[in-house]
Structure formats: structure tokens, C-alpha cells
Length: 232
Image (cartoon, rainbow, N blue to C red; front, top):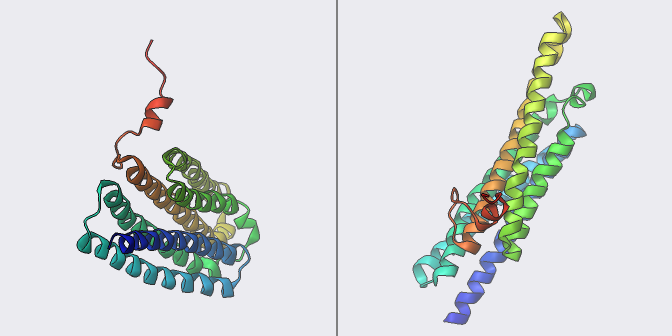
């Protein structure tokens, strides 16, 4: 019985890793569809999102079997509970990939794309998702905290994109603004979606810390405490 239980936990572990890899692939594919104006890639991103929905259902089912059919010890219970939360965030990453891909047909002006560094934003956001899963694989709460800290980089990139929007509206005039404003609004929306991807990666990292250290999201981790300056 216990051997079967450990096998189920290992299956859960592998399925979560696979779903995380699919989330990164979906965002990367959606962004390449935008940057290359490639509708085939946009379609692929939508298909990846559909596969992730199925993965979420399968993982949820396994989590419930482990919770209801077994009596997990404290550490295992945290792992299963954290997984339930993590797959919800990963599924939302898949949704955001589809949202991005749906805007690909409307982004046609490379000069406007150059105004916002979507490529770097995507790299950081995807890296955060990947590293949050690496932290889970390694059971490394320090790496998870470093993912959380990187959220500020994507937040700042979104702020810069908004400033570019203001510059476009106030520094250009007449027909040029009318022609470009709607397309730039779509680009700005994509940057917001990438910011949300980073938020979900942050959530995953917070649940990794809970799985490893038992510290609930919102509480201060030992890593954060260690970085604070000591009172003299």
C-alpha cells in the first residue's frame, strides 16, 4: 500500500513538472507568433492551452485520490496541497498564452513593436515560471524566493510600456496616432499579460516555499529575514 502511495506521489511530481514545461512552451510559442506575425504558431499556442486544461483535470483527480484515499504525513500533505494551488496558476499561464496568441493577427507594425521590449519581458516571465518549477524539483526555497524577487523586473517593464503609450498619444498628432493607437493598445495589453504571467510564477514560487518550509504565502520566509539588515 505504501509503495503504491509513493508511486502516486512521484506521478504527481512528474505531471506537475510536465504541466509547467507546457506553460513555458505555450507562452514562448504565443510570443513568437506575435513577434513573427505567425498565425500557425498562434494556433499551436491555443492547442497547448487546451492540453494544459486536460493536465489540470488529471492532476486535480490524482491530488484528490491522495488526499481522500491515503493519510498523508505532514510533509506530503503540504506537497499535495501546494500542487493543487500551483496547477491553478499554471493553468492561468496557459490561458494568458491563448490571450496573447489571439492578438497576433493585429500586430503588424514592427516599429511599434520596437517601442516595447516584449522579447525581454517574455524571457523574464518564462524564466520565472521555469525557475519556480526548478525550485519545486529541487525543493529549494531560496530559489523560489529569488523568483519572487524578479517579479519587480516585469512590473517595471510594464510601467515603461505605459509610459511609451503616453508618449505616443501626446507627442504624435492626428492621423498617425489614430492609425497606431489601437495596435499599440494591443501591444500594451500583451505586456500586461506577461506581467500577469510573472505574477502567477510568483504564486507558484510562494507555494513551493510552503511545500518545503511550511510557510504560507504572505508570511515572511527565513530567507527574507536573513537578508534584512540587523538592528544596531
